[in-house]
Length: 227
Image (cartoon, rainbow, N blue to C red):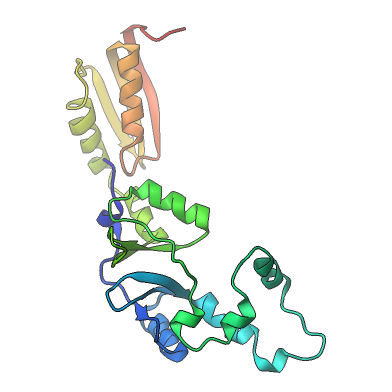
């Protein structure tokens, strides 16, 4: 039910080391069709991430723009005011270590897909290097990878809800429960002995990967929930 990052991540990852020159980093990004790559040390530990945005600082701060009275764009001045790395200084770098954003925001392979999505949202990033407990690179997970869990066939979702939840997860009679799935929306219909069990069934179905909504049409014999 609860997919982990390791289930959806890309294991073959383009990476660079700290001494990789600017031009070579740009070539790696273009060759692999990605907008960012992890920067690793000699033992494979992730020490940062370098992105197209990091490289474009060089264009933003090209020497020809340094004229009397020139000020960096407002977004850059705000970033510096919030304690970010001096973008003008960063733009003078020539290697991945000098240009990268560090420390890198990473996740573990056993992090849940939902947890990874929350990290991306909180940190405002589109992809996360996946590292082991020692910080060594194991893969990378992107927003696109996380969306894979919502692109499941309806019959696969229905089978999981029936086999693992309705028939296998509750210590109660669920023979009167019917499952219908259409476009990721699960409809639970029928009758159960207790209201509390019906509510548990709905909550468990909501947590199945690929389910976008659960429509609760369950009835019950005994209303054992507090009023």
